[in-house]
Length: 336
Image (cartoon, rainbow, N blue to C red; front, side, top):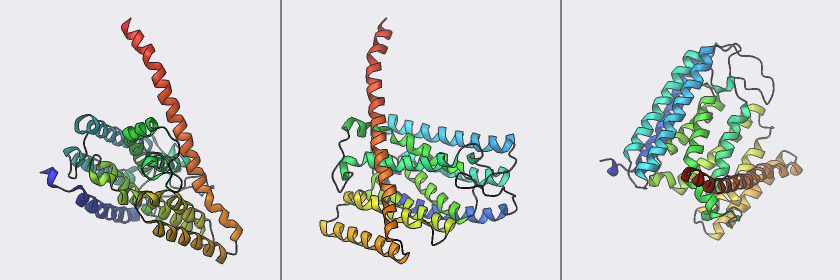
């Protein structure tokens, strides 16, 4: 029966359910208005954490996170070792994954209401932001062969590196999504709501492993571009219309122009039109702000992402090489 349930239909239902869950976060978040928090202390300070955490507030976040993470990793391992094939319908493990992630979303709602704190009490805000950046960079690496990295041309990354990333990316991606999900309390600020909606979509994507919906290029592109909307809106909320939001908007859209749109099968004319519209939009926005020279800031995010692709490729190559060098010694030890 599950083979007859189209994963694409489940994906649509899942997006609607994610929106409904975001609404529930907003509704329950109204009960958190009376919690006293410390004054904001700058960019490296995470505001939404208790001034005086207890053993129970810390344990509730870390134990729930660990249970969620281990359950998700177990499901991925089970799928890779027992299923190992893509279908247009659902596997039984997909249903289990959807149920597990939904259950932990509800658990996080309850945990926030009872104990409030997330993982943010003990780890840096940059670890949460960095996990999502690492996810986006890994996608650029994995898609290098299909859509290229620079204007449709692939970077010279060894196939064994890409193959390794494709095989094991689920573990990294689930860590990035689950870690970030439990990093934050389920507050009802606009930034939290946008972020949790994005996390729900990533958890949905992770739950649909080994289905055709999981690899649908329009859906995966939507997840990549969602970070542009999230980053831009949060920047506007934090610093107002005169803040640094254009850097986030045109920075992430710059990655779309240079890389992501080349995997959609668009004609040359369409791609040129999108590139011209992008450049014109950036010039108009910075021109209206009276800061055309500031338009150079839009290259920061693409430059960082492409640099990190190279760093990630080198690290994976070194790891694979070390594993290859270590195998003969281990075999010799076993023979002895």
